[in-house]
Structures are given as structure tokens and as C-alpha cells.
Amino acid sequence: MAGKQTRTAPNVRVVSHHPWRQGLLLGVVVLVTLAGALGGYWLGQASGALDSTYLSAIERLNATNEDAIQRLQAQLVESELAREVDAAAARTLRDSIRGLKDELASLTEEVTFYKSLMAPSSVARGLQIADFELTAMDAPGRYTFHLLLTQVEARRDWVQGAATLVVHGRQPQTTGSDKATTIVERVLPLTEIVEGDSYPLKFRFRYFQDLTGVISLPAGFEPERIVVTAEKRGASPLDRSFDWTVAG
Image (cartoon, rainbow, N blue to C red):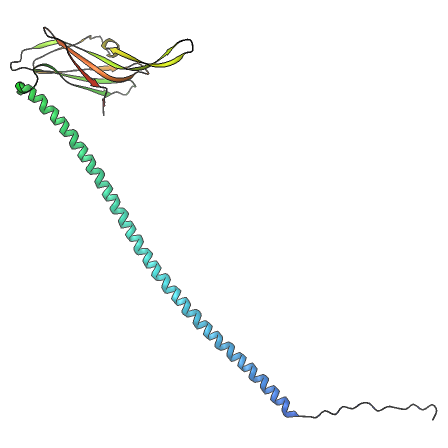
């Protein structure tokens, strides 16, 4: 027939049906899943146990280190305390030695002084300038002096006379048109340094006499030594030089 279409039969694929394979695949999947879960759980347990062991070891090491640190700190404190005690003891000992030396020097001077009074045959005879001492006052350039005179004789009569003081030192001096400053030597006699109007210093004694007064130095003057001159009637003057040393 002219208008009649021919219908083509569709391609048909025949697939064999095996229901047991699907069950096997499903079982394999389940087994793999269970194995993975069990493996993960085991690994988690093992990792947790390892972490716990490591943490415990670190904690024990930390505790040991803390104990060691505490022991070392205690030893350090004890060592520093012992060092401070030793230093304090050393300072005390040095001060004691210094004090004993000063006391010994003072006693030696006293022994010499009293020996000169009681046993004149063993020391130099006649008028003696025994000692000269300076003590600083509050005002700059002002000092208190003590001059000790003694007489060493087997038979002591009254001795009288006068003493003078002369200070040797240096002082800046401006000279020339350029106002240049130079250091020059200068000698200050008793009349320029001792306050008061008693010139010279009179003395009269049989055994000893302590003469005191106040010395005032001009600004800028640097004293180096002081020369004491004592002269009694009928005898040659006696001179003695002392370094400028201020007590205390």
C-alpha cells in the first residue's frame, strides 16, 4: 500500500538477572564499612592512649623540673645570705681593726706624752711642740686648731713665751693685661689667719699647755703645711712643721 508506513521494531537488549550478586555487593559494602569503623575506633583508642602516655610523661618531667628549680632557688638564697653575712662580717672586722689602730696610735701618743712628763731622761729635753690638730668648722675655710706644748725637764720650773703660726700653700693669682691666672706660693702669717687680737699666742706652764683658736683662710687658698714656732725667754726658737691635715 502506497500510503502505508512501515513500523520498525525497537532494539531489545536481553540482560541476565542475578539477584545473588546484589546481595553479595551489599554484604561487601557493609563489611568494608564495618571494617573502616572498627579501624577508626581502634586508631582513635591507640592515639588517645599514646596522647595520655605522652601527657603523663610531660607532667612528670614538669614536676621534676619544678622541684629542681625550687631546690636551686633555695640554694641561691642561702648562698646570697651567706655572702651578705660574710661581707658584713668583713666590714665589721675592717672597722674594728681600723678603730683599734686609731686607738693604738692615740694611746701611743698619750704614752709618749706622759712618758715625757714622768721620765724626761728618756726623751728630748726642754720645750717641745708636742702636737697640732685641725678640725673643720661649718663655714668654708674656717678651722679650729689645738696646739699642745710640753716641757721635758728633770726639774720643771715655769716656762713662758709665745708661739706663732705660718701657713704655706698656693693660691690663684690674676696677672697681666690678658688677665691670665697663675698658681703662686703664698705664706700666711698668724696675723692674717687667726681670729682675735692675741698676737702672738702667749703660753706659761710647768708641764703642758693646750693653745686653741680659729683659723680663717682666704677664698681660693689651698693650704699645704703649717709651721709652728715656739720661743721661750732666754732660749732659741723651736720650729716644727705639720702637714695640713684636718681631723675627721
